[in-house]
Amino acid sequence: MLAVGKQRSLSRISGLILVLALAGCNSTADLATYPSVYGQRPAAMQQMTDEEAVNMQERLTALAGQRRSGAISEAEYQRRLKELQLLAERHGPDALKEIEN
Image (cartoon, rainbow, N blue to C red):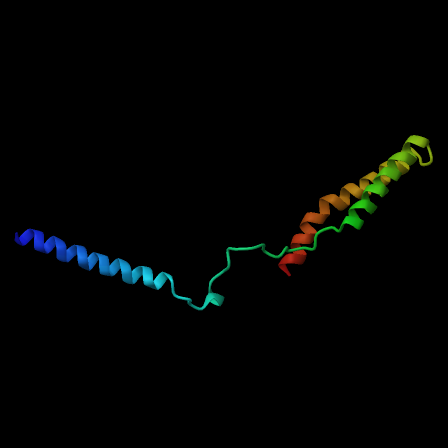
């Protein structure tokens, strides 16, 4: 009989501790000190706009068209292509440096 009484006491104490712990979870603590995991995070760099994407696509299409029609030489095409490839290679590290500063 005595063992059953101790188990009930322990159960009640455990229940009380659980209730108190859960009550602390519902408090509205200073939320400014905790990072928000909801919603979208702001981008580190500004995203390309639709107009910029269309402009870039038009430039590349025009360059390919000039090459096909012979309006520019193969050497000029390769020069412009290399310029765009260098821009693509440097863009990531340059953007990272800008973000870090």
